[in-house]
Length: 539
Image 1: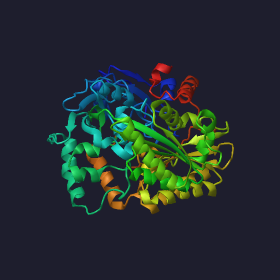
Image 2 (image 1 turned 135 degrees about the horizontal axis):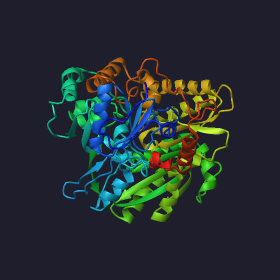
Image 3 (image 1 turned 90 degrees about the vertical axis):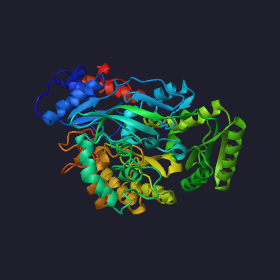
Image 4 (image 1 turned 30 degrees about the vertical axis):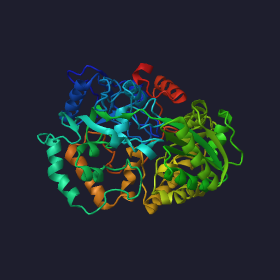
């Protein structure tokens, strides 16, 4: 692709210089891919102008929010579209419990706006301080409290979309579809009949949350196109506004920090806490605990192989505390080595700070170890979770690699970070072997490669190993209906010819460098975890 110039009428920033492209060459995941240009639309009209230009010229676009995604779906060699400036909103409507926000608004900011009307947006990822609403919708994000409230999809009632040909329309639950749009007409004509006629589940049965593939099963159940668009990772449309469903602000909470002498006992106790109605059940393994021990005032026994963070909710402080104690007894019965009760806000904040500091904690590793998110989002049916955890540990042990396991045990969902010594000559091959082994493990256990982070460019080449042929074919047909020229985030959800999971790793000493000023800026973002910072503003 030759040098590009800004589309006529585009009012936002459009840059092709090495520094600008460099600061958008990485996200929170492992990839480094230098784009050919960066576009920062000022508003939804600017997005329309950009998409129409891209459609007319066959130029792929890669939509991006804060860049905190792990699956490498926000990096690529084409034009990065930073949607972080789409920050308009209307106050939450207390009578309808709805709120419309621009997709560049961060989740925690949206929660503050909702709270002004005594309402709440209950999807609460640990990245909520910087994860944009657009990114959350794109990946069907979840978080610690998804065990109670589910993932993003259930809380989206409308999306204002810019489709691949530049047409703009709201898609709302329960409303008539704009069938005059070519995109919608093609899907209803070419794909919908095949989905409705299929006897395949088009989902991983028993998995509690899913952000892999297209949500064709959810669409078949509801016939609401919103369900299909959520989780599509910028491959079917760009989102400029989102309508959220809200709930009354939450009641009182109380929490537990529970340690176990075996990781397996922690996994069993997680299942019990979930059964008893916990609003959050988070797992931390020994490696994580060993790193975290020096950074928290909470006593973590040296013998702990695993720990659970558990949250209980009630209508009153007493009700929450009673619920907490019920789960504490269940944990003791499951073999807990220590149980710390946190019935009040200050103590709760201390113990949950251990979990929310996951990325900063991992950044304090030995300087020769890099924390790489390679098999970091798998989930399996709950009954298979102990087998999954054991299998992941075995896969890393077979390749003489360390890993950290933490995440949403209540949903049988683990985040796994490989700890890689990049001085070792064969680290790339061993890392690839771990990915292959864990992918095969997930397939055997009936699980998904991605529960909440999306497929991105990392997992898309592997989808045929965990989805059956009919599902994969319907994914391709869906992509073709919505984006026949392939300009929306190509290589995500549907692989390109010859696509590999990680062709370029940003931690690789041999990777091509980026512009020095971009390197300084990205290192500062990584150290501070301030992913919401506007990248061009760092230069």
